[in-house]
Image (cartoon, rainbow, N blue to C red; front, side, top):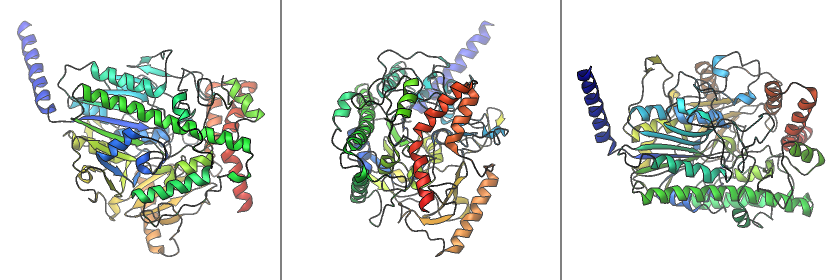
Length: 594
């Protein structure tokens, strides 16, 4: 027995030595994921918000101006971490929005399937330490938590969102805010603020293996700027008065700046979304309130950037900065479902049931509920059309910055089309980690469909995809659909403010989606429609009912999952309807004027 033990120990020592020798040349990876961040919400993409840390990363790397993700959070996270289309990864939509007619299918559960492998698992197998601190939202059973999906150390929020100041749910579809640490339920500290806490835990995890020569992978999915939009007062003060001119002015200012920076083509124009209110028609009191809502939103972004800076400085202090690659992006575009006026009697009643207030003076602070309405959401996505939940560019196109170790190009921008499924294969390439085939760990898995985009880090004009059929990238969310091929995109929005018609767009020259080319290039439209229908078949996309409303489905699923009595059902219904009233009212106005 002793001899066998010595042989085993010798084998382990040889394995560790192999890992260490190969790890020295491999970079650490820090993957930073914002939540509901609009395309022009950070300074390198045209924002007025001070984001010096992200600006520094952009100057030290490559900014992708034609990068696309999913239209809401869980599908984006599934694709980001696996390189597999959201439908095949088991997350075609967030579980809170999947209708009963689709829930019979195994891949329509809204949780990460067991037939996909996370980048964390692959890196862990290759000798990396793997850490996660932040929002997970890919399943909460023990086998689905990040501690079972390749992460060595974790502190994770299982829900779609939660309060940023304390451990409580942000909407009543949850009875509590579900946090987990290393696979077990977790109680947040009393001095919790989300962005600060997540960076604190990331630093703690990294330092726990300070003596190790093995590289690390740290995944930090922030709560910023998902509702409730909240920030420390010192950051809010920095933005008071900045948004007094309203959302129309902001949208145009950001368009101009994005053109100056080369983020979008100088031919870019921006449509006026029907969900945007007339700023000039608002009362002075409403203007004051709306301007502060946006100031808190900007403050939350600035606070996130500040805490990213703390991580960067810590890595410099411990001598790990030079060998670290940073990737920053967002899960989807800006969130449009904040109530048009959250200070109404109905809204105040619903918020009070959750222990929240919408008072102007405390907006953004502990105990307050804040969000931006569709009007400022359009400005956050400027100059793009639409926002989260929709497949317009404002819902799908977000910032992507890759900087640090291994990035030869510095301060450059690329308008090469790239996709969220590209992140995992790119990380694998940069860490010299083998991409799995159709089997991993003795089980059959879905192959990675994304492309390695690492070549763009030395040559920002390198083409990752061409115009061949195999280069097409499709996407679907609750009936809304898109397909990308070369510089072109076809898009379908099944409900208002969309019109239920397919459109053809050149998103390289016209990222604002102002010029429908369907009648000009009917052959291209038909070819891309054929490719989309093949995408539906290949990715097992299920049809949606004609009257599906994703916001209403949240209410129905939430009531079904948590409540049974009519009184409580009524309360949750009133709360969610109040929160979504802005988009609902705009939709009715659009339909009336159509």
